[in-house]
Image (cartoon, rainbow, N blue to C red; front, side, top):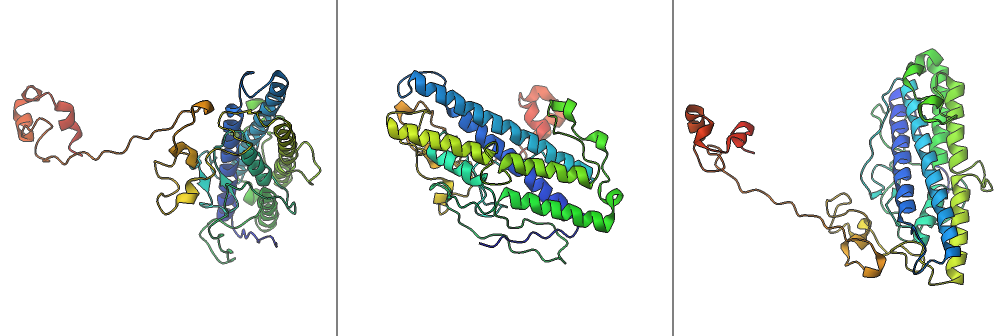
Length: 350
């Protein structure tokens, strides 16, 4: 499948795509932390002492990768500051399914399972690597249309992998540097950026020119998906190793349950809010995560059912009266002693 071309003709689109990259790193770290925290914390039913050693090893891998996503998030924000934009620290709620992203870029909080690991491997894959996403993630929806060079309003663009997005950002930095010059593109102060002494990451260096900007992008790509499929230290390689070991242990002992809610390697529920678009929008208040939270919990899972209190619309009051029915004009003449609802009078009627 040919890679869609990402067009960056001006600083505003570059800033927009860097904000989207920061948002992606932010969402990814949340995914990995949730999965790490879902793993069992002690030996018990479904986990032997030997198996628990593997569980602890997988937890360390997940937490380590989440920490590197935090580093990447900080590096992208350094790039934003370097080109004169503000750091971008916001993100949408989970689940985030192809809203502002291509259909294949999806995020959801999942307990440790085969589905979760396959989704992580797919998300961190390198360009040209043929792996399938987990079955619970349907790639539905349309990709953002190609952007014309004459468009001025920044907007999302289609990409297949993180590597392609960051590669396109590198091309944009080279092109804009050639047209504007380094002094014209990198106008942000280096002293306003995070540095190694800020958080203890030696790779977190201020960006002040094209060379340092490209070095930042190279580190993000190499640590994330790796330069090739064979990079064991990349996120892609480490997730693949955890998946392979988990599948082998599950096959050897079907009773092995490393996380509450794990049933034979599949995420409990087998679906998500995206499967119910006829009933719910992806970010309705009732859609807090995947479909299993709408089902009656299995006591053996040890997971609470998330209950959402329905929004109750207050009855409409006469705008001329307070909560006790007193005419508001009486408060203006008699003061607070006329009614104990003085705060409601100060706020006004909603």
